[in-house]
Image 1 (cartoon, rainbow, N blue to C red):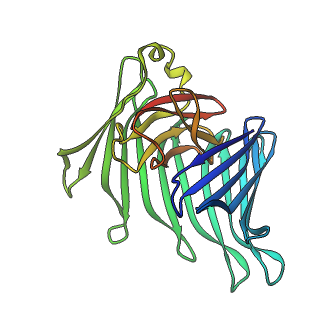
Image 2: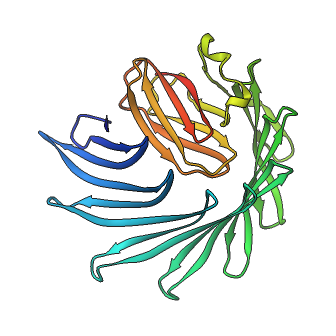
Image 3: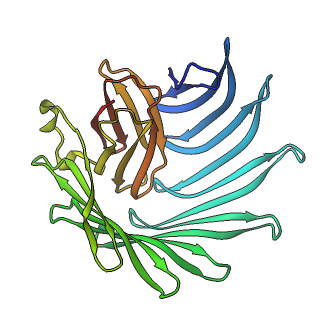
Amino acid sequence: FIKEFISAWVPGGDKFLYKYSGGLMTEEIRQQWLNPVWINSSKTTYTYTGTDLTATLLQYWNGASWIDYAYGSTTYSGGFKVSSQGSTWNPSTLSWDSTNRNFWSYTGSRLDTFTSQKWDTLSLEFENNSRYINVYSDTNLMASISQTWLGSAWQNTNGIVYNDLPSGKLNTRAHMNWNISTNEWDSTSRGHFFYNSYDNHLETHYEQWKSTYWDTADIITKVHFYYDDELKTSIKPSDNPFHTLSVYPNPATGADHVYVDFRVQNTDPVQITIFNTLGQTIYSVKETGSIGDHLVEIPLQHLSPGTYFIRVSGKDGNQVIKLLR
């Protein structure tokens, strides 16, 4: 079936047409409004093996037909993503030119490292670009470290340290930057997570590090409006695969966009869907799966004031948050 999303019915406004098969998005067409008609702009085609996204083809419209532009492929092992490669179409050679590739490594189901490489047009080889390392205590994710390649060695750039409550829920999340002068980590900010009696995430208090102390006087508090009473008892920790799921700002009165912030423990793709009180889908986007924190920006220009619901769903389940516009 096909679903449609229109961002603005004005010159330059966008319309998106979606095709699905077996609950999976197989095609997304972007059109632009050039009065008095919609004109094709770009098309993305998704190919799956089972439920695994194995190929993505991006094409643009030249006025008469679709022209290849970019292609990406992904391989899996044991249900886990292990490598991907991107390329762009070269109209001069009528062939695909490599641009980048990525690798994932695991211990069991835990993601240990993610390595990104880019194609060097001079050496005609892939070279390291960036790397992410996850550190665990038993099965709990304790830290994520970002590094960049300097030509002969990896150098730290930034990191996140996680502290969990005895229940397994996230207690604090601290952000750090690597100081190349001292070869030490410098704290930048941290978030404290608060929950209600149903273990639903209600608030996050963010503090800034001021050289020698945490500035608790300048706390940014994000208050979230979650579930109707009849839904609260149905959202238990065991039913929630998205730890610390939150949407902000919420209410989003006058905002052009909101951020969907969540943390996952597997590498399956995540679908984010906005629907109205009638159950009609207003917007939908797929987020590539990876263990750790995700922050997804959702446009709101097309939404009229009112009540909406944001559903985040994956292989292990789904969670719904009420959004006030």
